[in-house]
Image 1 (tube, rainbow, N blue to C red):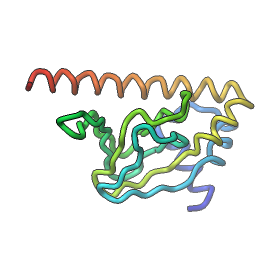
Image 2 (cartoon, rainbow, N blue to C red; image 1 turned 180 degrees about the vertical axis):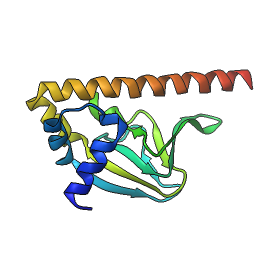
Image 3 (tube, helix red, strand yellow; image 1 turned 120 degrees about the vertical axis):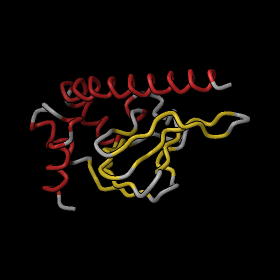
Length: 154
């Protein structure tokens, strides 16, 4: 995919709505295409977190492993949503597993590249932090509802 196509996809994604063009220019330099087959892990809890994904097609399940029960699905994400925030918060380790439910296409953004750009441009860092704070809140709410459901159903 050409850089121009990646830039267009990033600009059109709701996650980046209202972001300055100069910041979009920095982001596109950290972007690449990613493809995951159904059943393939995208993220593994505890592994190094150096990216996040803008889902373009397909679905991914956020999961935690529970002793005695196995994987527990916390949230299902689909096209237009953002997967992964641990690249932003030390110690940069995934806090969940994420598995493609079906063929899933995404734009991957390199977290190391972005952390460097955020160090150089505090305004970009603040913009990303505001946006990812909302993603974290959504994941925490989904986990809370899932836990309530587990305890209700015994």
